[in-house]
Length: 116
Length: 113
Image 1 (cartoon, rainbow over the protein chains, first blue to last red):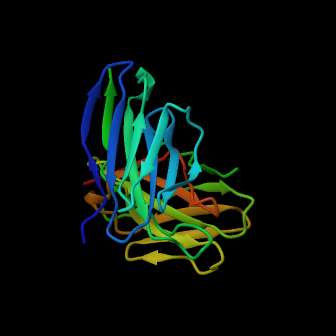
Image 2: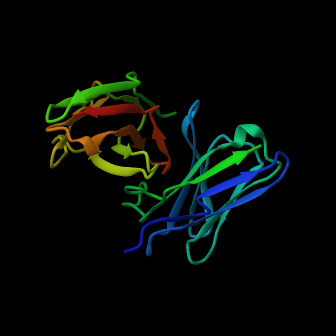
């Protein structure tokens, strides 16, 4: 069974540009979550999608957005990039849990975004 | 709000010895899961072990076991017979009804040959 696939693995962008990152979940997984990892802030939750709907959102500005397609693949977009957006962006997919919450998350290898 | 605290930034252990990584958390929910994730230099986050809050029995996965103290909101990871491949960053995490994983800051574990 293929794991979570994130593309691209590395990205360099200039301040003010926008970027789109992609995540293909494990087959059969319907929930996709995104996390930002930086040395200073650690791992922070961005948002979670389930059946093409955003189910939860973290405390990030509106420049960060996402979507999920009918095949559960997800994209996240960051507009008007700032230097502080440089980070490792991790995607995780999960089966729907017991109705209360998502079961264990399987992570991709991440996209390393550098903003210059 | 959920919080997860890992107060030790780094630890070192001799190969074949045992090491314990500490984690405390806070949540107002009754139903939640706790996890330990490992992140090696390859950056892939790998699930090491998980504990369901309503289960009193401590989870065990081969050389990895936890000490879950619900009343104290403590969730430590014990690694027995440490191996060089255990060298990585370890994150304690919690998930509740909001489907959001909350991570601690992580601890860098180095296994010395």
